[in-house]
Image (cartoon, rainbow, N blue to C red):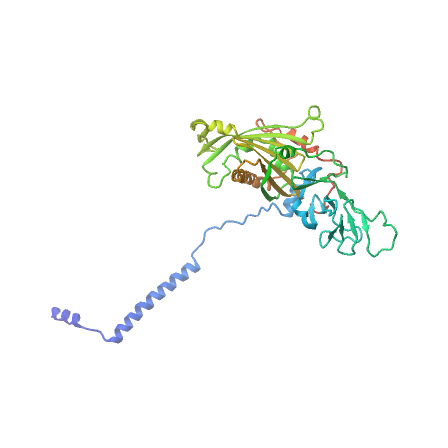
Length: 426
């Protein structure tokens, strides 16, 4: 009986409506299961603790207030690279906001000389660089047509019937120098004439070097930071230990040898605005760095010591805003002039102008310029976030920071603390 029942069941074919109902039930079960799973995923049974937002902001008003409390005044006395010859070409008036001042630079059409004036017309305060026009050797104000020459004097008032223009109708001017396509302005908190002249560029002209590479950048830091690096040899073994080439910084380390010399009143009379510094990349280490030794290039690769020793960087800090580099290589010398212009107390416009002799390949200059730019970036995070310790906690092995601080203090005068300072926020 049981065998007959089994055979009957095997031969049984359910009606079509039963098959459809079963299939529908299966599909509905799968859909409901999927929907339930989705609800669980979306609703969630729990979560991981998230990362908190980074609340440190070095450009916040609060943090700027902390930094400005101890840093030296933001605008030291000296020569500053404020623009380039290209900025005043073709009758252009170049507007400048730096050193706590608003200025305009222009080139006289007759004298061909560059002049720098306070930006606002002595009449009613219109900005001479915004809509103004160069007429002869003067700037014509866009508001009422007053014309101001390179000495700051008003030479024409188009609607006035006065026989002579009052002497009070004038504005302040600033001494400037045009050197190798760049324009420098003398800034002094006391309003004094230049106390010294730029001269580190002279050998570049004598050797007939030409401009090859220009790089521009902005750093949110005090102007003292780059120069104070000269007094800190050990940071070259930490921040600058990784080779400054993308892709190699984690596998190749560098060892540096540093020297520095700060001026003294006896042997460096007349040159107190200069200090000197040398840097040599003594060795490269594969899979090494400041935290652990690696495989020395100098000790394991023939002729590497001779090549490394043939590359020397000699640096001269000429005043607070100019750094002159001489890079000696096996095939010749390159020169680089790095300039710092304080746009704000903690904002610097930095330009690097690279020069080389005619026979020096430009692609090599570009390589060195790129390495230099990456090396500068290694300092950025520290520079843009640090505070200034007037009372330093120095230990054995630190660099000659006191000598540097004495040198840097020489760039200030009695009124430096007040120049360009906003009583609410600078």
